[in-house]
Length: 94
Image (cartoon, rainbow, N blue to C red; front, side):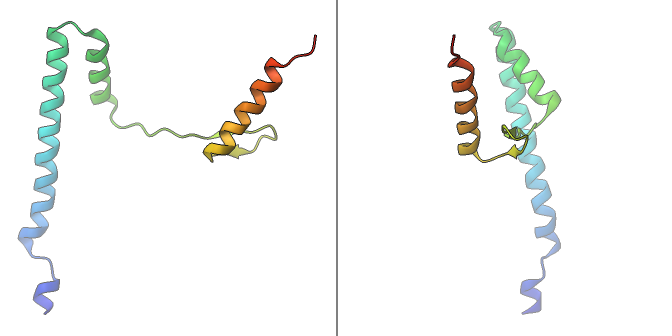
């Protein structure tokens, strides 16, 4: 029973190999896509692909400050904050 629960050396080595193989295939497909965009002179997608490879994954944060200078990350609170801001900005009495 202990032998079944202990990972074998071959299983431990397969996971990184599979990951690297998939990454290599992904990069190869991405490079072919960039070459295709270069050949058909699609400049916007060419530079977007190049920058994506150079910069890598950049996570985005959706945090804003509300009227009281508190940070808000909940989407409904963010939307209501923008709604209040623009209603005050656009409804100016003359």
